[in-house]
Image (cartoon, rainbow, N blue to C red; front, top):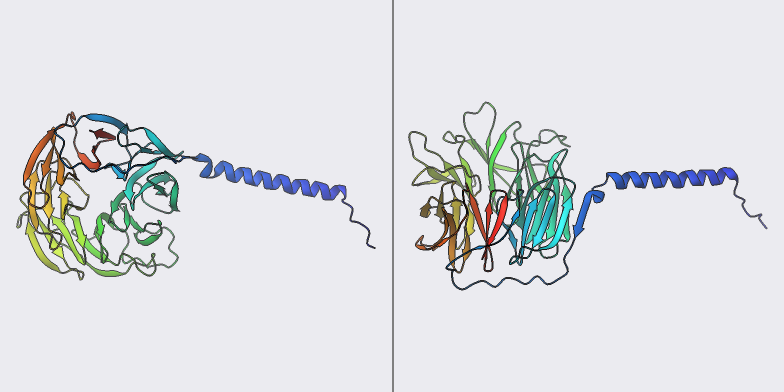
Amino acid sequence: MLAPERRTRTDLLVAAALVVTVLVAASVVWLTSDARGTTSTTWDGPVPTPAAPQALPRTLAEAWRAASAATTAPVVSGGTIATADGGAVIGRDPLSGEERWRYERDRALCAATEAWGDVVSVYRDRRGCGQVTALDAATGARVAQRTGDTDDPVHLVDTGSHLIALGSTRLEMWRSDLVRTIEYGRVDAPVNPKVQPRSGCELRSADSGAEVLAVLERCANEPSGRLTLLEPSPEDSSKPEQFASSVLPEAGADARIVAVVGDRTAVYLPPDGIAGARIEVFDGDGTRVDTHALPRPAGASWDPAIERGGVLVWWTGRDTVALSTSDFAPQWTVEGTLGNGDILAGSLLLPVDGALMAVDSRTGRRGPRIDVERGAVESVNVAVAGEVVVEQRGDEVVALR
């Protein structure tokens, strides 16, 4: 029979040292982890879907307002309005503005938007605006997360199926689980060198459809902007697959991507002394196939057109222009608008000075004006949550009823 093992004093000291080492390592990980700097309070109560009104309201008055400097347009999904300011994303009751859920980090927000029915929040770290969390709009629960190398700042472009994070030197596109489908532009530490078609270019505008990702960029030693057409979902996200790329002689500093539908890309070109302001249409091979004149030059807005009421609605920075979804031909124009609108009771509500103007989205016919007291504002973007009309005014979200 074997004698039982006996622990020596040295064995006990070694075991104690190992325990201390593990505890210290765990403490260091906890103290430096993102989890320590994150507060997540979810909501398990009812989230009723707001009923859509059948008629336009005659009057609108402010119901509540909240700071939301990290958004450029109201974030509305189902029965939730989300605001994003400082390091906190807050899901609110549309009628009262009361807080339902909160996701807060000890980092600054770069941007937040609605996509796929979730609230997507982008936080800043030492590499840029690359810490991304998708939150369930109803509960605030975390749905997906990713961390990557991105620019600071970034502009989020919702293409419907994907979300583009556009910076001046680098672009990424994410699907609904936040998996990256493509990276384009600057790569700090590429696994395979020379996989990007160009380097050192400034990315200025982008949009995507199911078939084409269109990027307007300005590269060194080139006289004007370059239109590049890419596969939105290449086999390897780090290796862009380019369909076409060419310099557009007329694409000055104010040129931008207006929309992408199918394999067609619409590009805004400002007056150049020969031709006036116009939209030029390119096919999947980068060949110009059509040109549409505009009534006047665009202003300073870089958001692509959005679909509203069966047409593509493009806020140019000074006017709202409706474009055909088939060939991008202008259908109607409302001059002097302040930003993007939304559909309420079958009409497109467009923000104008001192009011919201109701417009038939298919014909452009003007309807009633609903007075809104805003004070001095430069731009207003509108979204609708049932009977609540939400306006993004600078760094604030204002709910009207």
